Length: 469
Image (cartoon, rainbow, N blue to C red; front, side):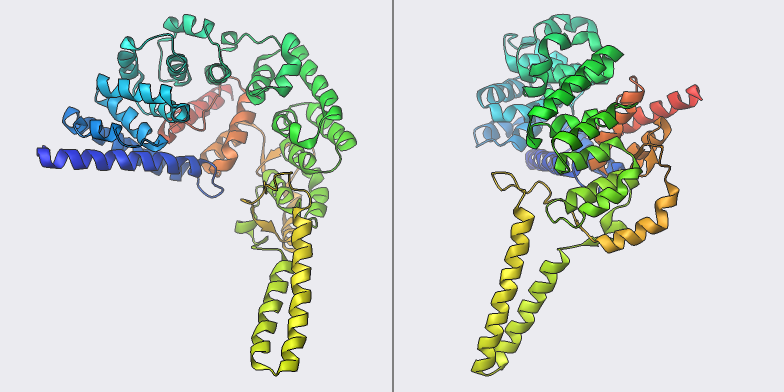
């Protein structure tokens, strides 16, 4: 189909704007509790069609781009323009996108994200005229290493050797994990162990050594972690508990017991129980459902262990029963006061004030353990109903083996984890991907990658599992 000049420009702009908006929506989709890989696939296929539309419209569609580059650019605009410049091989527009990303650091992540939506061969061609002393240049080269479609690895030894900034190290660690290439990263554990636990990219470094280090290295890291827990506050240790508590053998139990002894039964302890994966702790988690400051994270951990979701299995309440009841009581009494005599109005007003006091006390209790900035880390989680969950647990507890370790009600075995990666909500998939690769280094899945590429990788993993059996 051929389009007239009057059609190409508005159609190009429409494709470009929709692509940018869908990219922003995708970030929210990836952390959603309800969306699954099937929904992500629909979303990503729509984005791929928009990219293909921009490619088909080609150079004629780029005529209006110069005007857009003169407008105020936000990340979603740069994302779509960078993709468009690549798929149309427009060197001038690509250079302009590079200049914007280098001049305004807040646009860099959008530029690098765009590179994941173009063919690596097109990107390599456009990069030939790029000055090589730029950090963004090195980051883009490293982004190609992350993309498992790219096979030109022999040309990248110099890029790996010249890694300088923490952002570059983080991308290199990600590439090494996805490519199962530990030799790319040279961060000696013995010299940096304190730095690993206090620096800005702790998760990636810790994960790298747990995945690829030998048993003595892992034991060294775990021992130091236990010592670190004794000297730290909860907010400083939560990031790596998600890794260490999920470790095989007795290492996970050791971390949990260290937490219990030195930090106590708080938020980090509850999170650790989920990553440990043993349903023997369910009764203890049920007790936390009575504490408004910990009820939601405890319910989330219960879901992580059992696969039961409050909103799906009938043990969710939209607000705490007490707050809900008191609000209804206040509303009823206010209505009665409007139709009563003055004496009744005064009486009802007093009762309403008492109800308000009750509500405030409950809210204060909920806020008691918030951070100094009063940030509610669990605002995205549903409130649980303890009685309803007890009824669910009484019916289903015999389905679980006390000696096994679970994720979302499935045993942590490769076949089960692959099924979870295909079926569970997007918010849980990074945990399943980590546990899968921790058992099988070659089964590395980038849960942020385009869904259709993830599906291809999962099919390959299934073949590997079948061949092992």
